Image (cartoon, rainbow, N blue to C red; front, side, top):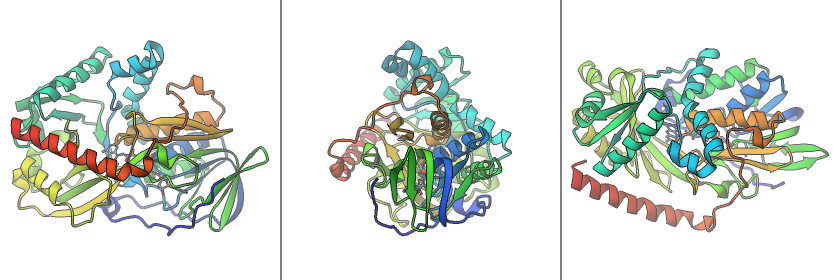
Length: 438
Ligand SMILES: Cc1cc2nc3c(=O)[nH]c(=O)nc-3n(C[C@H](O)[C@H](O)[C@H](O)COP(=O)(O)OP(=O)(O)OC[C@H]3O[C@@H](n4cnc5c(N)ncnc54)[C@H](O)[C@@H]3O)c2cc1C
């Protein structure tokens, strides 16, 4: 359909995850012409989960990634497995109506459990820990909102815990800057690149064919199906799933313009000394706060403290972790003498309505993207839903709304708009911090 210029084939960018992940599966690039029932473009959690579910259903699946499985956001994220979406359960039910909303809430509420169940089922080695996720509130107003959110989950049977400010600081082991918060026991952490590689290995085991360094450069109709071209090969398939999220290129008209890719940056310290490790993020809990440009933090399996933050339109340089380091030192003053060991960044795909989007783009062409920084659990679920569509399920049978593709107006000006928004949010977060000591 669209011919895009051949691009440099990317190698895996350096990060904590790249340095400590399970080995990648041995894959080759696509050479020559092959056939499949379903072609999947993109090897992050969305594409890999779709490949695994389709292969388990006995379909002949080919997955192509421009880099390798986990090359995109799936190999670089914070590894926090968080159930739910940005919208609270009541808001989702208001948006979609009681019945459809309740189905969606059940699906997204179960997303983290689905990830951990998949990990257990396929024996994926990825340092999976399901010890809960804390959302600490940075202002009194944010605490009111967070408490209402927690209560809504509680009304739906989730054994959440509301935490006083003292409890938050004791569990996180941080400076007393939060007003309180809540703990969601469904949340947890994974080594994100190992999780992606584990999904890839599970899909291979079920018979899927995966190729690395195989950017799809063009997609066109071919009789009753589709034909995708790479630099050195082609795939004919009855159905196509586009799972390219924040790394979408011009392959499908309008797809990359339906999301705004914003960089999120992370740093990881050297492993904390034992005494500090005992005090910080006790019991393997992880956290992301309520700031507009949120801070998120966790430990890795070796006791490194990771801190991440949003968000700029421009790729941050590796020497530009300074603001994040300042935030880390403010939050965890005892880390002042511990050097950061890794700094890296990746693209978060934001949508205008803050919801992920599921599309039927054409006859047997499907896409799922726009996880707004909450994709470890949700992209895994989205992959399953895409697999169901490609396997013949009707859109109305899914617990997730299928919506038309809507490119964001004035997308060309997104750089300036996001920069202005980030400056404004930074100002508001700094103002809140001055007022509340956060
Ligand atoms: C720094 C950072 C921190 C984050 N932290 C968290 C977190 O703690 N918790 C959470 O829930 N979420 C987090 N997220 C979000 C989460 O990582 C994503 O939502 C999720 O990984 C999206 O998965 P995906 O498969 O849809 O996309 P991706 O993993 O980005 O995969 C897309 C793939 O498509 C491939 N591709 C693109 N175009 C083509 C083409 N033409 N041909 C072939 N291949 C192509 C790319 O190579 C890429 O591998 C974070 C994201 C970032 C960047």
